[in-house]
Every structure is written in structure tokens, then in C-alpha cells.
Image (cartoon, rainbow over all chains, first blue to last red; front, side):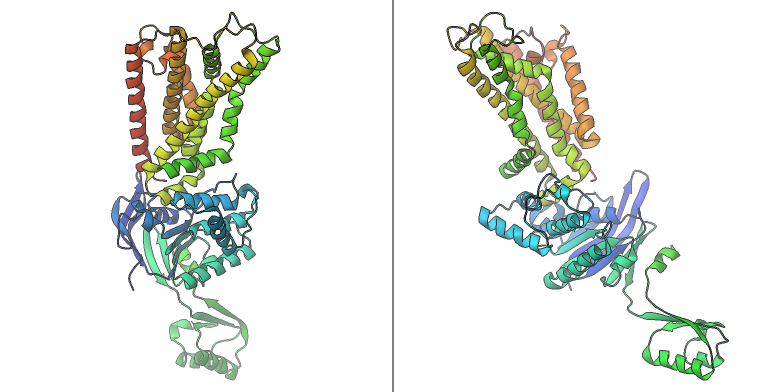
Length: 291
Length: 250
């Protein structure tokens, strides 16, 4: 599959402070990629570099095989984004969208304009009323931001911390929306977060920024089983699972139906008293802890 | 470019800037009413024609400085203000040409200044025609074309150019320092040029000399000098503004 975005060995420093060093990755159409890292690790800087808002010191970024894409209106029309920036608060949602279409060079006759903008507002579940954006809740502003990100022929969607400040219902709405957009429009989505739980499960792979560099991780759907016992675990268990995963009173292994049942059978046969069982998904939290 | 300028003007319209401009200029109507109904605070010496009345109202507003501060703030908030708050990010990525965007913002602000200038003349003329004309202050002739009046007209035109210069400098400063600081900087620059325009040795070199000095000597040489000098300053700051915005990490 042809890459839609290619980031090759980019470096970025602000004065003497290096933020990104030799950063490389590629994004394919239709992929949802999580960009994770601590606060201040360079996630927003990387996203702004991709958008051409911040210059890079070395390396290159290619969008649709062009390195000058950020000077090309048609190519920029294919990149939508949601960054932490204010909208025009003295205007309504309708007027905000109208203005952004205008900046893109798109002017429509009044009726067509109304139909187009109302479609976009419906997409993010906002009404076409005269309410000014300054009267909107944070969640509504985020949804309007998403609407603006989806104007035009968006093929790459960049979302910087889209869940910050949202309540659980708001988070769920945005999560569902992201999945829907990726599926329906074959849109590549790069989504950043410092809260792994928010993006876990929707991304196909992750880019972890740590110490100015990027590490790539594929999403692992396996679940890990940890069994805590009150009594000694029998030696026979080592014929079912690897020895390194067994201690006196703790067993851990990746969940597989047969293995799980064999382990339980073995424990019951040897009258081992089970104290607790934990089932956990592959967690990116580990990456933060390892850092 | 035309569409971008219209868009910036639309944003100004939504912020009610055009109404503010009209309100500033309604001073001429207020003065007209004062003359018509002999309000005690309206005092004039002698008689005047429409040109002198328009020129006096223009000069009054210019020296008070409120419209100047307003235009500095408008320009700075369009550029530095939007940079501070982040709206400019959306604009830059949509337009994909930073210099073009900055030029559009500047030209839209200049359009608002020109609108102010025209409205000032129109409202003052209207005020003279309907309120002042048949009072004891009005001359018999509606329009007197003498040197003094031509100089008044030139003074007001260069006042307009001076406003453009101060606004463009404020806009340049706003890229780095934001809307409020750059407006304050613009006010300081206004105060400095106002002082320098009183110094005999250098006053002719000060942009806006005709408008700033009440006893300015206006001749063809001086007009050309001011035109070249003002044009140069505008072009230099336009270039600097384009360079600054292009090299800026947002």
C-alpha cells in the first residue's frame, strides 16, 4: 500500500533544546495510529511539523510524495487537523465553518452554502443556530473543531489530544466518530494522547515518543492472565507454561483457551487455592514505566 | 487575494468595526448640531467653508489619537492577536501562503482606514451642508479653493498615510509581541513622532510631518519627499513582515 505520509529522519530544535531527533515513520491510508508520549515529549511539535507550521532542521516530510505540500493549497486541503487553538468565539459554528471554507477559496451561493455547512454540522451533531461559539461547552467546541478538520477532501486527519477536557460520554462520542471516519472515508488518522486508556483499542499501531526519538509498536490484542494462589503451585504446571512465568504463588501467561483450561485443571487437581485472577490487555502504560 | 481581503473585511464587519468607524466620525454631526443649536461648548473663531470644516474635524480626531489607536489595535489583533489565540494556524494551513495571508490582512486594514477617511469626509460634508451652512459660522461660498484649503486637504491625506505607516509598524510588532503590547508600542511611536515633528532640524524627515506639525510648510518638494519616505517605510515593513511570518514557528 502506498504511504500517504512519510517522515524521514527529521530533527527539530528550539535554540539549544532538541525536541525531535532522527524521527522517521510512515502512515498508510485508512490506518489509525496513536502517537503517545509524556507531556512535553514533542507530540504537538511533530504534528505541527507535519502541518508545515513549524520548520524542520533536517530530514524531510512527504505527503502524497511531495515535500512542498504545505505550500500547495490542494494538498493541504487533504489534511485535516484538530490542534489546541481557539476558534472565532464571537461567531457562530455556521460562520466559523463558512470562514474556513472561504480561506480555502471555496465560495458557494447562499443555498448551497447552507446545505453544505448544515451537513457538516449534522456530522458532528451540532445545530445551525445563532449561538456564538463562546457560549459552547468544551465538548461542543471539540466537535466543531472536528467539523473544521473534515472540511474538504480530508485524507489525513491529525488529532492532537482530542480527549483532553472531555467527560466519558464526550470521549466515547469522539472515539466512535474517529473509527467511523477511518472506515467510511479510508482516512489515515494520527491521534496523540498522553492518556493511553483513551486511545487504546482504536489504534492499529502506536508511535511512542521518548527522549526525542520515536519507537513503533504494533497493537497486541492478546490478554495476559495472572493467577495468584494462597498455596504452593505444583511443579507439573511447568509442563503447560514456561518455567520463567511461574513463581511460588504467581503464574502468568498469554490467554489461550486450551492453556487456560489446562492450568485451571492442574491447579484444581492439586487442590491449590486461588486467591485472585487478573486479566489484562497489552498495555502501553508499560512503555511509560520503562522510560 | 481579493477574496481573502473580503474575508478579513467580513471578520471586521462581524466584530462591528465598521460601526465603530462610523461612530468616531459622528463627532462631525455632534459639532454640527452644536453649531446649529448654539451649544455652549462649541466655540469657533471666524467663518469657515466646507473644506475648512471637514479639515478641522479630521484634524481634531487625528490629534485626539483614538481612531489611530483603534486602527493599530485592529491591525495587530488581525495578525498578532490571531497568532496568540491560535486562529492563524487554521488560516495558514488553508491558504498555504503565509505572505499572501499577511498582505490580505494589511490590505483589509488599509481598506478600513480608507473607509474611515471617506466616511469622515462624507459625514462632515453632510453635517456642514445640513447643520452649519445657514449659521453665522458659515462662509457665503460653500467651497473656497485657496492655498490654505488645498493644504488642509493635503494634510488630511498625509494624515491618512501616517495612520497606515503606524498601523503597519504595529502589525509587524504584533507578530512577536501580540496585539496589546504592539498597540502600546504604536502609541509610543505616535508620541515620539509627534515630539520629533516639533524639532526644526529634523521635522521634515518625520513621516507624517504634514499631519503632525500644525505649522508644517507644504510645498511640492516636501510632498515628494514625504511620499517617497512614506512609501519606503511601508515597503520595508511589508517585506519585514513577510519575512518574519515565513520564518516563524507557530
